[in-house]
Image (cartoon, rainbow, N blue to C red):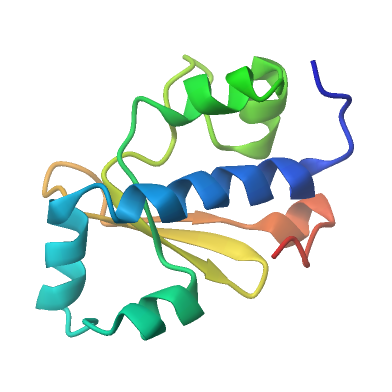
Length: 122
C-alpha cells in the first residue's frame, strides 16, 4: 500500500485516469461536441476527463491507495462507490468539477481541494 502523502498524488492519479477514459467513451465526447467543445487541442489544454463510474476505485486500489484514502479524498462514497459517475470532469483552479451526463443525477458535483490544503495538485 502507498503511504499517505496527502490528497494531491491521489487526485493526480485519479484525474490521469479520467483523462484516459474520455477517449474511451463516445457518449462523453459526443456531449462535449454538443456543448461546442470539439477541438482535441482545447480538450487537452483544459485537461477535460470523463468519470464513467464503477472503475476508479479498482484502478486506484490496484495502484496501492487504501480505500480509506479514497473516501477521505471524496472520490469514493462511504458505501465504496465512485463519487463521480457518468460525469465530464474539469480541473478548476485546484478543484474538480463534474458535470453529469445523466438526467437522473444532480447536474453538478464539486470537489474543493483547497479545503484539504492542496490548492495546487495539477
